[in-house]
Image (tube, rainbow, N blue to C red; front, side):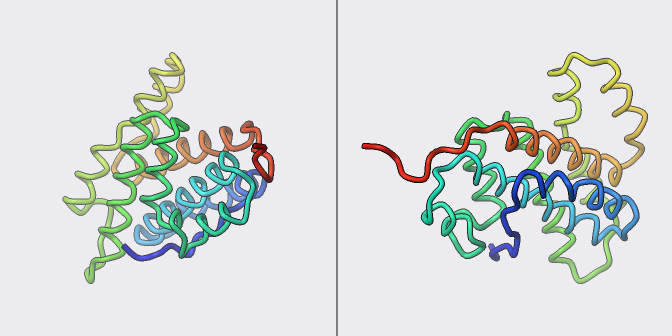
Length: 181
């Protein structure tokens, strides 16, 4: 798997960029939507890990794009293993990575209506989990009315997941620079 160019952003910067990224996801071509959406999700995972892990040069090195936690999958795996996200979110993060890879590694111009991409997007289930978890009929109704195809389901899933990751990052207490013995 290739190493990401994704940097770790401060929680406030990540939140500040969210509306710009979401506008881009809605207006850009399908290829850009898949790649930029997954990249923003990867950056969100890096931000959450940076907040959860010890403040140290070791953490910085691990989160560097060439470090042990520099890939999308490594970040997702550790965030889940640390119980920072629920399993349905983790599963959707994996599906989003698959969609991104499908677009990025295809010589043909794909769209979200491509049979394989549409099938992958059909596996996205975090929106339903989130609506049930929040016990909100309004959230479920919004998701049901907004999701009118694989592209909108992909975008809305990224919006909800990155919003949840940003909120979680903002409330985590940063561990001290050096652990006490």
